[in-house]
Length: 179
Length: 103
Image 1 (cartoon, rainbow over the protein chains, first blue to last red):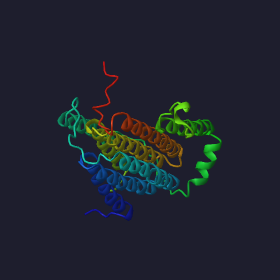
Image 2: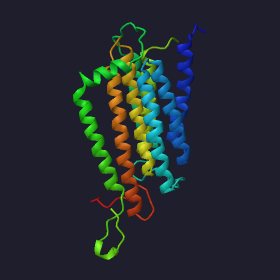
Image 3: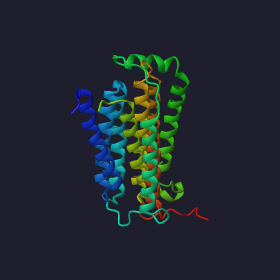
Image 4: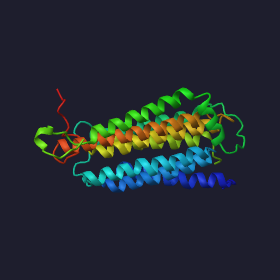
């Protein structure tokens, strides 16, 4: 066995967790199992971000993906309550063609990743990235930052409009005021 | 084997493939959303890996940060649509039933 340092060991352990969780999200019949396997995937991706010295990104991933998006998905699953799927594959794309397409795309990406001569620089030990990200967001990347804030406003308004109940005619409702 | 850039890229490819399989085969609308989140995470892993192996460059991390923001906005709107479909189609979020626009 070649000498592995702690970086490699942590990487391989969480790569294994990541692959197992992703396969469970993809192949599980039970939607709740898939949602919690997605939790395992998101934790593994956060650990990979830490290994890639992206500490602010790792914490943001945990806060927003696990604390926001995954909780929202679990709410939606609980509200709609169709947990166990009877027919898993849809009528137009069966399971075998989908598996072939998926395997082909994965092999293509993996072969390209391994065989391409990437121009890698020497990895320098870097400190906390929060200050640099903060400076960049307000100087170099100010335009995407402002557009992202407008987009979040649009998304909030859109989600509220889409998810509310139909507004009945006020004359029929009597005194019940609802929006 | 010592871990390099290729290892992280292959992990990103695994996430993408798993998400693609979810999107292609799930009939439940929330199952499709799980696949989309996996694909976005695969792209984020790739971006952070390239940012790390390009000494001192944080553009990839900022790109990944914006991708997380967009994923959150898209998940909120997608789940609002799922709830609207659930109400409209009599308690079903089977994507085969939502075919009113089919020609």
